[in-house]
Image 1: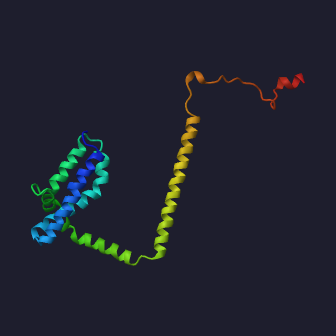
Image 2: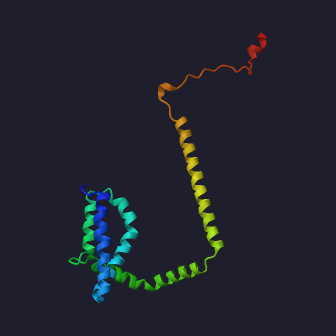
Length: 182
């Protein structure tokens, strides 16, 4: 790995966010329909990638040359020479969104309706539920820790560590021969 997470961040921020933001500004200022469309497509692809980045980085961080490939991919998406975002948007994103547009609109409208009708009681119930879940998680963690500690104490012993068990009568028990002697 030549480039790591922290050394790739300035490059990704410059070419993945700062340059496209400035190019978007210029496209709006010049009132270029083609420029606006190109940068809107970029931001759509960028938003999708940002949503998936947590999962992709979680796996990709263990892949050799991952951050180098990530930088190359962002450059391919953003630079005017390649216009990768336009290609991805026209080939995959636009057909998918067009095909599912009515379903997405329906779900967005349902969520918007729920948020418009949100009451203080609903928020309080959500907070109480989240606190109960947090308490349940904390209880489960404490029980798991207690069980792990108990298993360590009761853990397997080495074959030579076993103590010899000798049958000795308890002080409270008396055998028949002991009763005769008394």
